[in-house]
Image (cartoon, rainbow, N blue to C red; front, side):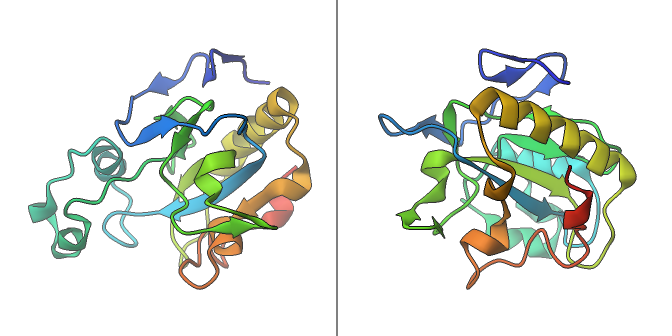
Length: 176
């Protein structure tokens, strides 16, 4: 199992994102939202995701990046194709990953969620190493924050009119 210290996972790369803020008073992580991201779409260039989350993405690198000009997003965790783990936002802070969203009767899921991005897309299978890392993180977060398995959801579950990720190629049966 991984170890959380001061709301960060020990022993992994921590790359602070400016795209976060304090959670509202009396809000704590209650759900985990799984996402998929690739930049450009269907291409796995982890540096582009890191640059997006740290506001350093050169929008001139690819025509599809023009729509990201001025966009400020982040996630707590990114799991690249090789299964490594990168953290951008401490778990006690609000990362900007969910956008307009709801879970049950609550809206603005960023206030009470932890966002985990997998480098991937709707069209490709995820790597075995990603599932291994994801499971380690999920077990750790569930134990540390008391989150239940039923409260692990996809971005498509909390924003169904806008999002499809983690997509049909994500195998929910692989979540332990």
